[in-house]
Image (tube, rainbow, N blue to C red; front, side, top):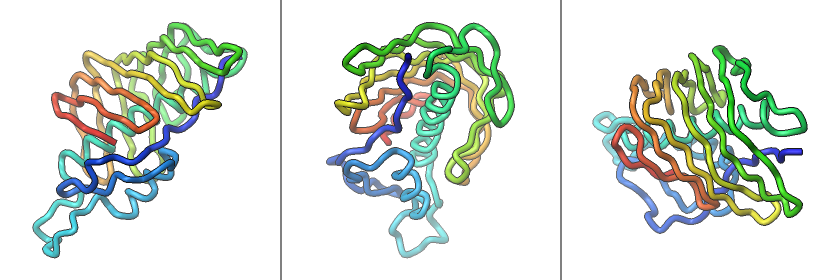
Length: 200
């Protein structure tokens, strides 16, 4: 039986408050809990002149888009890979619209470490967490690495040579097709999205 994929946990980040962004020292909170807290703050700057400051600048939008990619794959993994009968090599529904075809392998050993070597080929795959992002994806993305919920370890990567993304992230429009490279650890997410660095 392949293990369920947990939410990531965000640990303290020495970068602290970033211009026009947020406090990252959110020790031990699940990724979804962090998302709720960041949504409440609106990714807003602490500038007193809010009329001249975007609610969520490009760096902030990239953070939320990166989160949306990983959260989308987590939901697809738990719905179609985890358990006893993975849905491999056949198109399956993305839940809110569109399809995904998952190929590759996933296994969990006796110590609870799950190893992943998966590819998600998405076709107008619609995903939303109900508050922070609503995105549609077309393209293939690889998910590789390991995680262990028992020991709290996480070492996964996500890579796509060309992923089309459209919709909204933290209320800002997203419309782009580009390469994606994301690393996920116990500390959170870092990566390159359309040539721009982000860290969540």
